[in-house]
Amino acid sequence: MYVMNIAIFVSGSGSNCENVIQYFSGSDKYCIALVVSSRADAYALERAKRLGVPSAVVPRSELNQPDTVLPLLCKHQIGFIVLAGFLPLIPDYLLDTFPHRIVNIHPALLPKYGGKGMWGHHVHEAVKAAGETETGITIHYVTPVCDGGEIIAQFSTTLTPEDTPDTIAEKVHLLEMKHFPQVLEGIFEQISR
Ligand code: GAR
Image 1 (tube, protein in one colour):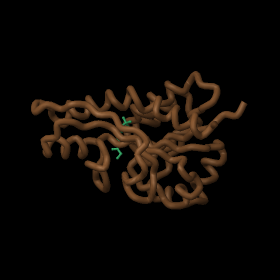
Image 2: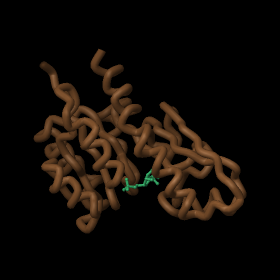
Image 3: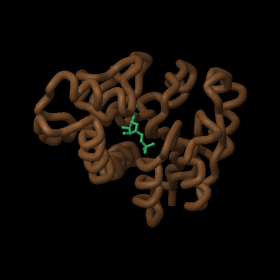
């Protein structure tokens, strides 16, 4: 049976990465075959090791070198890339090699609170400062426009005036844990059909 190999790109803690690895660990169709980190000190690398998933460090400077990255992805027969807290911009050669096969999770309801500098806690601080009554997560295709690709799915959560950037982050985290793997599975199923 054909197995789709997936790479997860990370830069930080890797809680989404771990959740996705665990979700697909029993699958005979979809295999998280590689974790790529832009930082050597990302905790996500420890998670990958504990879960027995091969990993590699590709610093920002090397990401722009097709001769470094493509052989790595080829070696692991990667057919799809998931960005889960990955901070560098995806270079054009990767978008060309994986057309409609790179998705990102963003911790807000795009198009609000997206773009350069909008990642992690910065997003939740901006949401709080604007007095929003809701926030959420967006899963979208990756294009050359930062956080601008076609939206695949969004899930929202209600905010109260008492919420702080930290409690907003917790609410968003719950949404990510609940929905991200299932949305990915839906995308993979569609591709495999
Ligand atoms: C997640 O909340 C993800 O949505 C966000 O980074 C966090 C990574 O957490 N991504 C962005 O901000 C991208 N612009 P994790 O490393 O624990 O999965």
